[in-house]
Amino acid sequence: MGGKLFKNFSFFSATISFFILIGIFSILFTYAQDSIREFGFDFLGSEVWEADEDDEEIGIFGGFIPIIGTLLSTLIAMAIATPLAMGIAIFLTEIAHKTLVKPVSIAIELLAAIPSIIYGMWGLFYLAPIIQSTFGGQGVGLLTAGVVLAIMIIPFMAAITRDSMNTVPDVLKESAYAMGATKFEVIKDVIMPYSKGGIIGSIILALGRALGETMAVAFLIGSVMSIPSNITDPTTSIPVLLANNFSEAMGLEMSSMYYLALVLFVVSLAIISVAKFYFLRQKVK
Amino acid sequence: MSNLIMETKDFNFTYAGVDDPSLKNINLPIEKNKITAMIGPSGCGKSTLLRAMNRIHDLYPGNKYEGEINLYGAKGKENILDLKKENDLISLRQQVGMIFQKPTPFPMSIYDNVAYGMKLAGVKNKSELDGRVEKALKDAAIWNETKDRMNTSALGMSGGQQQRLCIARAVALKPEVMLFDEPTSALDPISTGAIEELIAELKKDVSVVIVTHNMQQASRLSDYTAFMYLGDMVEYDKTDTIFMNPNEKLTEDYITGRFG
Ligand SMILES: Nc1ncnc2c1ncn2[C@@H]1O[C@H](COP(=O)(O)OP(=O)(O)OP(=O)(O)O)[C@@H](O)[C@H]1O
Ligand SMILES: [Mg+2]
Image (cartoon, protein in one colour):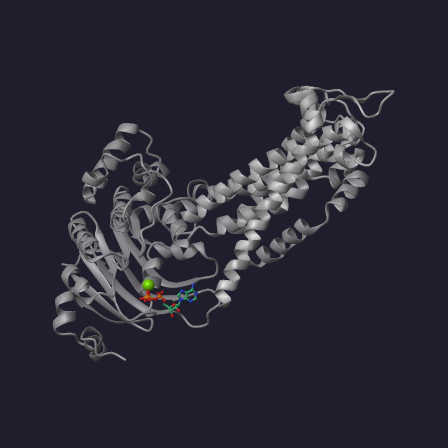
């Protein structure tokens, strides 16, 4: 009786989440219609974002700059975060003394729980000046946004990678040592390949998170509609553009913002699906 | 007369964070090119002793060894408890191989599994590797089952095949001694038979120490048997003597199943 109720309930929830997904997609798609009809796929490659001077309802809108800004800031973040997160995970599972593992793990989980606006403020007031004096530029820009994004996703990536490295059975490691392997060789030849699924999954989930991050990036990327020619240049990203312009935009601009949101939605969903695929495969093994 | 490859002398072992030693005053000779079986009830210290013989306990900090474990290898007599440097431990583990209760294929191809230890040892020559991989797989009696799938993942093999692959992997290093910790307890009777045959075959080239809970296996396979109880070595003798005419009442009770 209870079992049946529970089963129905789970089925209901699963169905609901599926419909919510479909619902979001159709709403984005519907509102983006005007822009899609007007600009088609050229939207993705066009750099102009200008409302008509006389009629704010129309204008020329292209998504290239925020799309590029999103991709570049995410790329910088991933390039910094991936090796560091792997290093932390390896340190925690294979190198650190037992007494150190617990506090460091807790610290990492706490870092993952800090609201992103705090990272944004810290990045603006503390990191931006450092980056400016080291690399030049104006403080805010792609690099600053990328670095703070990296710091935000490292804990998350490190925690998932650590969990997946912890699933490597002790006897498997022992048998590699018993063949005369060093610690480094065990990490490289046994632990990394064995936890490959989890590692790739963590990278992809972190990627999804970096792509959609709004608050921290809004503080740090500069929020200007220009193509960065330098890594320290300010630019904008999809979530930041949406957050900044949503209250004032109307007509075709509004529709173009839905178009951008649709692009982000589809990309994120695709990434999460790939991650799920990897995680599922790992469980089967 | 006696021809030792290894021996433990007044050996004590204490796990990290435990007050009392788990092994007390163990004196066990390991004869060259013979099979020595270790038997005894669960928790008596068989695995602990076996894992001291290749110093695999060192992977976990804080364990304490006392006494001597001598290896009479190519370099002559050497107390392996004196080894400190990582390189010396690696060379010890190349001389003293180990097979675990569950098969432990690495997440790589069949070929790479067998070649792994040799590559670690610095063998780079492709034709030498090929030759030794083939020989090891033949020695482990799985060449016929593997020769057409050398590049497929070892994880796709059956449990019994995986265990023989692990034996091949260890044999490929040409060790002096091989330690088996209940190598067949996770396998079906047919695979068990195959592994037993293989171990009997191996003693031409290596000296074998095998831990087992299976009395038939110990009596069929081994030349010498050691009976352990609660961290003590109760009795060690020729297998026939231990099974037909043991000195100690405790040994007899254990072997005849009148225990507890
Ligand atoms: N890592 C450890 N830390 C502390 N004590 C341990 C550890 N591993 C084993 N022991 C203890 O050491 C004793 C011997 O254990 P061991 O695993 O060697 O027994 P065994 O004879 O191999 O038993 P089995 O037949 O069940 O495999 C047991 O009392 C066990 O509880
Ligand atoms: Mg045991």
